[in-house]
Image 1: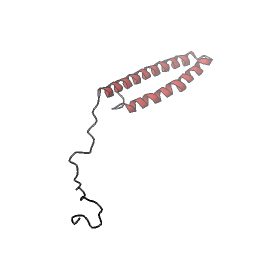
Image 2 (image 1 turned 90 degrees about the horizontal axis):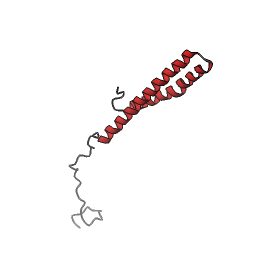
Image 3 (image 1 turned 60 degrees about the horizontal axis):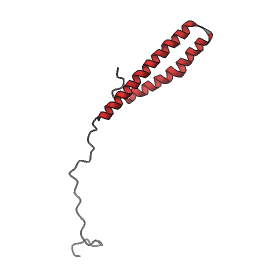
Image 4 (image 1 turned 135 degrees about the vertical axis):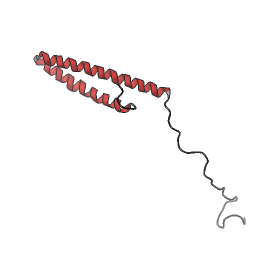
Length: 103
């Protein structure tokens, strides 16, 4: 017991703690094929949503041009209840895709 610290109850001396030679930082994340597939899927969805929104804008403009009583209301409903939420979703998709908007 002569080699142990004065108030220690250990039977053997503590092991020395050396820093690990292994790097603790995580390796850079590589794009997997599934990430590319997800990106392609989201890009396709965004393009389809933009096409739908363009069609709705055309129909709303045609309804306004007819200038009938209910047509103006229908055009406003299409614009506010369909186009505006679609635009929000398209912006969300663009921000989720790497590099933002891809045309």
